[in-house]
Image (cartoon, rainbow, N blue to C red; front, side, top):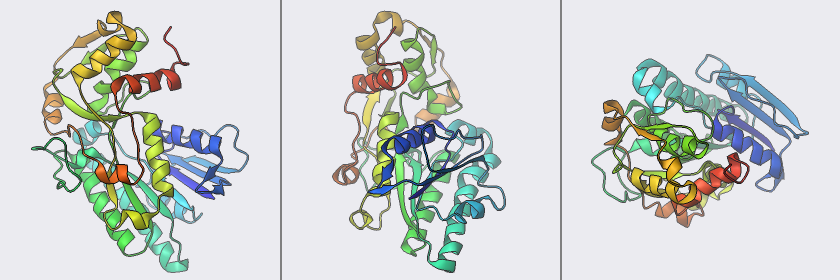
Amino acid sequence: MHVAIIGAAGMVGRKLTERLVREGRLNGKDIEAFTLIDVFQPESPAGFKGKVDARAADLSAPGEAEKLVSTRPDVIFHLAAIVSGEAELDFDKGYRINLDGTRYLFDAIRIANGQDGYKPRVVFTSSIAVFGAPLPYPIPDDFHTTPLTSYGTQKAISELLLSDYTRRGFFEGIGIRLPTICIRPGKPNAAASGFFSNILREPLVGQEAVLPVPETIRHWHASPRSAVGFLLHGATIDTDKVGPRRNLSMPGLSATVGEQIEALRKIAGEKAVSLIRREPNEMIMRMCEGWAPGFEATRARELGFTAETNFEEIIKVHIEDELGGSLK
């Protein structure tokens, strides 16, 4: 089994690689090789005895997609993207990386399929940003995609491409619409939704965090651990059961910012909550108005995808996975 991960240096990519190395198998087959690609140099996984090609590469650059596909990975996890805030601020970069890079990958696979019948499993990370206001709550599985950001538009177009290339038999694709991942480890990034993690992650270690929106904002969340689980299940699921609607809204947890803060209070106390500083940001507040508050995710649940059911659980996952299992 040869596994390729595009976006391997990112948070989800690193965690996915670590779990695959730890388990050593995917879909009942031993993993013998990894191809790990990102615009930043990915680290070679510790403890893996097989072949590793870990390199910095931009999928939207000429020839890079073809180079990846030439090694014929059995499973390709396509996680690479610039985040929502950055895609909104830099129009050209957003479309080049989030759309062109995806299309180049799909086309390289299509050409390889015509050459020798190559047909990998492609697991694509889409986003709940493919939906835009006005939105019902909860959002049903058959709700139309009307993104209100460039990032959401790029993901929605990529979903259509994935469905069509799968329909044509070029690859076996599945699109995973990730909830907002919370709590993201590491430093704050350029994602407009980053504050959902910041207001929990920083106070848990005694640092201040900025809240740019009202506590009434409701959103859809899942932990990094659940995100990896979604991807692995997408790589192994019987796609005949998925049918032609290949892009799935994942299960998650709908919560307001106020409910997040209350969960933080229960686990870390009032001292942690006092470290949250309110600084309204008009751009982020406008973007929030079009974000998804929550989903039914009935199809995904029936197909075996699972996630957390309360915010205390999400915080505990972060403490277990990132803080050594306890607060200092």
